[in-house]
Length: 203
Image (cartoon, rainbow, N blue to C red; front, side, top):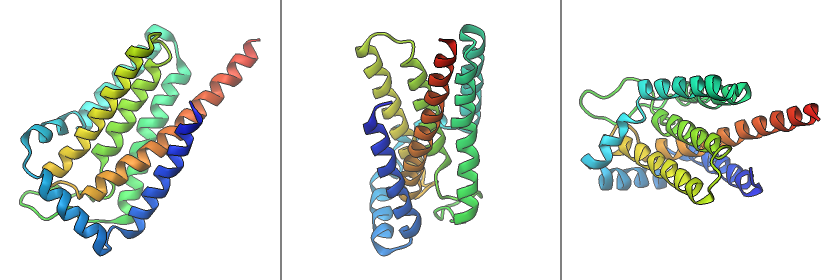
């Protein structure tokens, strides 16, 4: 992982902390209202929430684990997937219960807490984890750029879908993206350290 990724992770953490401590301030409240008004009711964007559904995340993660086990015997990769996605899920629930933020008011609203968005967090962790693991086997730089572009675009659209459906405030989504990226880089750092250590032992 390039140094710029770690710099972006630090910036992401800083942004998360700012949102975490300030989302009730007038500036962020106004931003939430403006962004929600812009995206609310967009049916195209709303459709992407299905990709970030918990069942889809779990099913895709299980398929990824099976592929890593059966085709590559990549046990470190399997632990990386669990640490990134399952660990991210635990982190999301811990933060939700600490912040205790109600969701936006609407009929038939979800009852779980709002901050940060689970869809935004877990979709980023799943898609970035898949893209990262593919980067180990895909030789073509052009194809790898395509994979990462798709992963980033889907992450953005899934997060925005929660705003379009009014299930989350925009600050919930932004916070989900930033803390998820920070957690992802921590997981990558662990994975690469273990991989380096294993390669040294083989020599």
